[in-house]
Image (cartoon, rainbow, N blue to C red; front, side, top):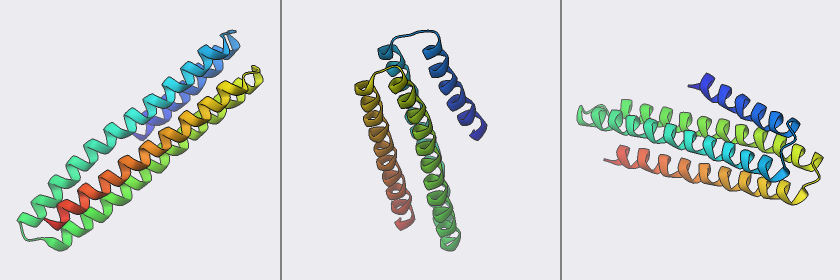
Length: 144
């Protein structure tokens, strides 16, 4: 999964770079950047949903078996993993965003660069909200 994310981020960055060198308009470049950022958010949220569902199942199963200590370990591991994934996704978004902003500034489009910066900040905020929901679901499962 990590390799897929790295590949997608690299492919996205190459698409943006190649599109700029192919003389696309700043608007087209900004649209591609926004789409790439959106795709990263979607993939990260899908991974969060899958991981949370599996964690909650494990926790409930352990609690049903009377293994509270093991359930607490699973919950802690799940929260750590979710936090790490969110941070990695955020770093990916910042890398893509920074590359896009640089391209747009080089193309003489500071307004579009600001728009991409705002999109990036909103995307990271969305991921943080998703992380908080994940943590809450895991804690609620642990509480029974």
